[in-house]
Amino acid sequence: MQQRIFSFAFLWTILALSLWLFGVHAGVFIIALLAFLTQLELYQLFEKMGLKPMKELGLAAGVVITIGAYYIGGVDSGNDLFVLCFVLLTLTIIRVDLQAGRLRSFMPTLFGLLYVPYLLHFLIKTVKLAEFHDESSATGMFLAVWIVAVAKCADVGGLLVGMQIGKTPLSVISPKKTYEGAAGGIVFSMLIGVMLYGVFHSIAPAGMTWWLCALIAIPIGIASIASDLVESAFKRQADVKDSGKLIPGIGGIFDLTDSLILTAPLGYLLFKYTLF
Image (cartoon, rainbow, N blue to C red; front, side, top):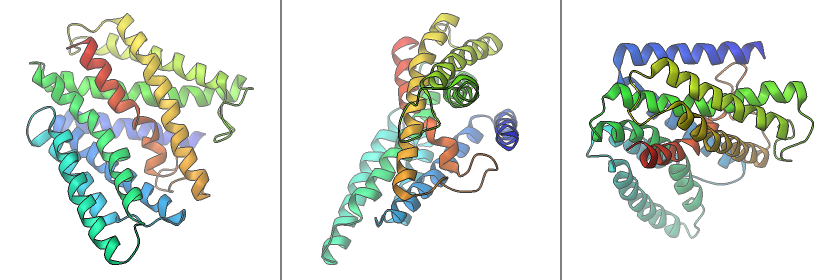
């Protein structure tokens, strides 16, 4: 637990310093790096299941989507790049696999592209959404960081509360998770959402309020828990405890980003239809 808390604090410090020194560009490249490493670990899990993703092609397409989402075109450039990469990857995989007489790379390669870089790019898209509506880059970064913090606090809060009072198992996929912990995690998400607004209200969008933060944090917290369970299912299928060993107390990069994958697009949509 101490290692987990230290790693959590260290990573947030690195994120804060990077954004302070280099602004939105640091955020874009951090998301791109996390997406790349997460997608790589997902492909490695697939390989342990006996699947054969085309890692190099899938990873290259993922980088194009995440980096291009900010630097190429408008708010929807990430969607356009995803469609282009998806079609090109599909044609390449079909050509290679059919020549070999089997189609074993199609699903794992394309699913890895969709599930990780495409869904995570919605954090970048949130920044561009704010800029498109004449808000500053700082406002966009605040919204993206708000989504990340609320999602991760559902994970951390769920762990802390679950250790203290958790009794009812939430899922056979992850036996240590409990309904009590999940409820505590959602409350933690609501609290951090309101606290972040209170501290950074000067750069928050005009339509953002403390009660809206509390309400939006509820579905974000639920999606965070569901996203975490999806990764647990992948690990269970691959018969591994962690997706990697890069981060002490946490595991791999996928173990770090798992709760962000479903929350990134959900957070974007919630902000899009409530703030802009």
